[in-house]
Length: 174
Figure (tube, rainbow, N blue to C red):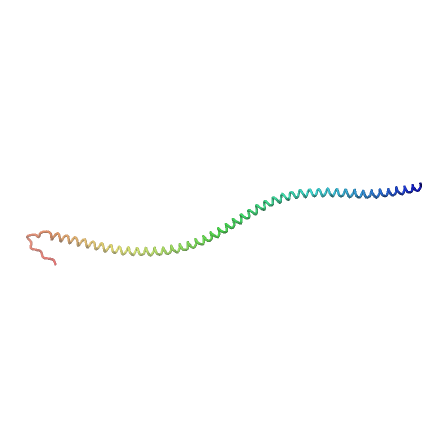
């Protein structure tokens, strides 16, 4: 029986060693489990924070896309307006140049017209002076004609009267 006691003692020691080994292993596993649970909790917290951040970033991204699309649309509209404005500026510049040429041509035409008017005025004056001279000559001629007509009428009147009986016939005027 002594042997059995020793054997039991050895079994108890082995069992105690086994318990100590299992206890250590369980302690380490428990510590590892606690550490892993803490890490899982931290990871879950981080994941939740990242999901919140991701949702916020997603909302921000959606807003940014809206703003970007609006800015892109506005940029396209502004580019079109700029092209239209540049086209209008080119057109206005061409019209300005054309108007400058027209004004230059008009000024030259007015200058030529003024010279012609001056020449016409000088010619009208000359013709007017000639007309005045002709009128003076005509008036003089008309006056002479009137005198001649009066003299003729007087002569006809004298010739149409009967000669006075007492006087001898008058001498003829050649």
